[in-house]
Image (cartoon, rainbow, N blue to C red; front, side, top):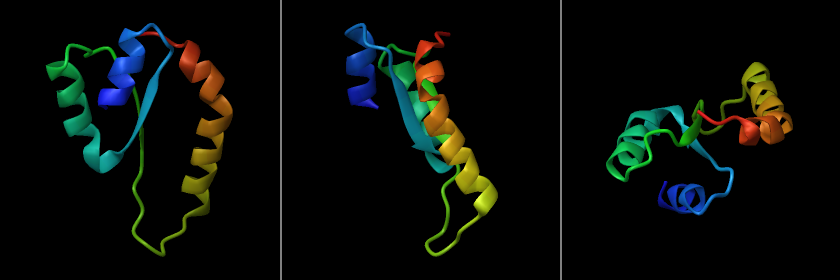
Length: 74
């Protein structure tokens, strides 16, 4: 979070990727550090050994969409 906030405040397009388990903490920290508008991409955290092809496909899609996500400003 702190690295993402540093880069965003430096004027760089920034997205912070966090597991869904940490979403609330990430948003709270962004708010506390003065960047409530920080782009946060939330993705599901899987248990060790679990594999879900649909969820894996979402990760691949997010990677392909990264340039568009970086252009999006809230």
